[in-house]
Length: 130
Image 1 (cartoon, rainbow, N blue to C red):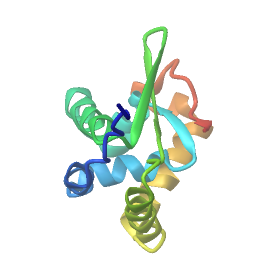
Image 2 (cartoon, rainbow, N blue to C red):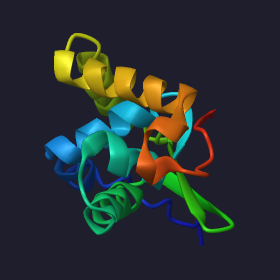
Image 3 (cartoon, helix red, strand yellow):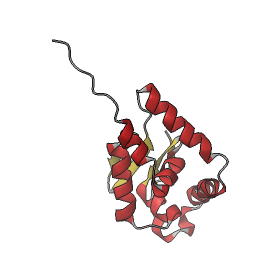
Image 4 (cartoon, rainbow, N blue to C red):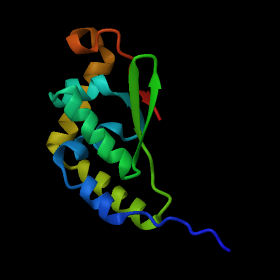
């Protein structure tokens, strides 16, 4: 008997993309792996709230996580499903012209270059290219 391949859950993907905080998180993860502490600093939201949104993105199959000591790192994962990848690519492309999204990226760049200026980032690992 042939093994069934689980179909990508498009409804869950659309639901994951239907929240401003989750979109901001994806925007910050484009092309890099980011420690959760940077999300807290850049988005100005609590760590539990950020973690809940990241868990939602993980369940949707578009974010992965890894632990390094006490630090949790997150990066975006491209779905193998072509339809899902196209939807995600379209969402990410829309961030390029969005001033608020670009302001988040700029603030992340500033935080990466001088984490000592941010109290919450003391000793935090700098985001790396994924």
